[in-house]
Amino acid sequence: MESFSPKNALYAATLAAAFCLAGQARAVELNGAGSSFHSNLYKEWMAEFNRANPDITVTYKSVGSGEGIRRFTQGSVAFGSTERPMTDAEIANVPENVLHVPTTAGMVVLAYNIPGFSGDLRLSRQALVGIMSGRIKTWDDPLIRAANPGVDIPKRNIAVVARRDASGTTFSFTTHLAAVSDAWKEVGTTVAWPNNAMIVSGNEGVAGRIAIAEYSIGYVEYSFAAQLNLRSALIENRAGQYVRADGASGSAALASALDGMPEDGRQIIPDPVGDTVYPIVSYSWTLLRKANKDPQVADGLKRFVGWGLVEGQTFAEGLGYIPLPAPVVNRAQAILAGLH
Image 1 (cartoon, helix red, strand yellow):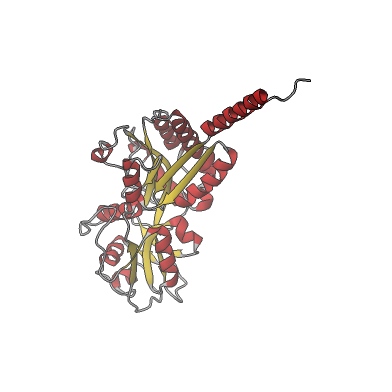
Image 2: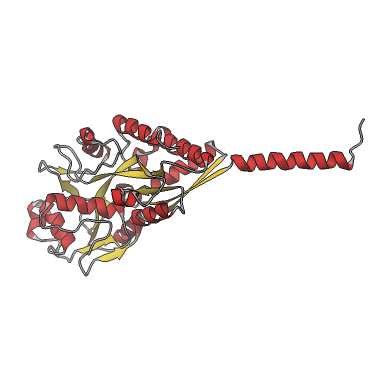
């Protein structure tokens, strides 16, 4: 038997180091940041995907759509997430170009905390705009009573809860308000709320504040309201029907606008049409660079987002999101195919 000489030891060490480096080369870390709207679903996706794909580690920070776009544009994250699509001018600041891949959709609900109120609160389009603008100040306002006949509504001041951070949820919500009322002028990820509004950060912050603040109401992504068992209002849609946020009404809203989905996926649905639609819905996009310098990063992103568009959709409804319609999945997969 050949003795284990220093020469052989050196060879073995070199070989071990080579295998170690090869293993390191295969390990890919994909960091993302952006929307809090998307974060509950991303958490589930990451747990499942990372477990099934040990060569890839996906992490995500819920910082709001505005901050997510900023970090993505600066190149400090591999992917972003937003409910407010980037503008052409913003995309021009990303040399590698940008892909908007719709990866989930959700509903913005008006969650409320009215002690002792056990009925279903209905909010007309006028009442919704009036509350959020600060013109309607008490729960027993005639506009609220008109949509809730025979219901005992307390004569208490309304406490509005809204977002401080640059938020895609705020963008989706204010886009809807502007679509339903000429009186609502301000649309964006940040807007000026009434002076007495409680201003907090993140969907989790809004839901948490409503849970503890009596006689409050605020806009929040459905899954966060459901997590804390918050009640949410039935909202009047374009057809004049008061609709509860649920999987059926959310899916109906997306289905009503399928013909308008553009090739680049950047579709906004400010006021969907139909008797059964829930009126405040939004896609959430994963932002990707079309050209990636590192082929392993490109492959990892394709695998993660591609998984989310198929296997990942099975987690959506259980977490309070809307599974993507098949035509939208097909469009998203075509967009993702452009990544390299």
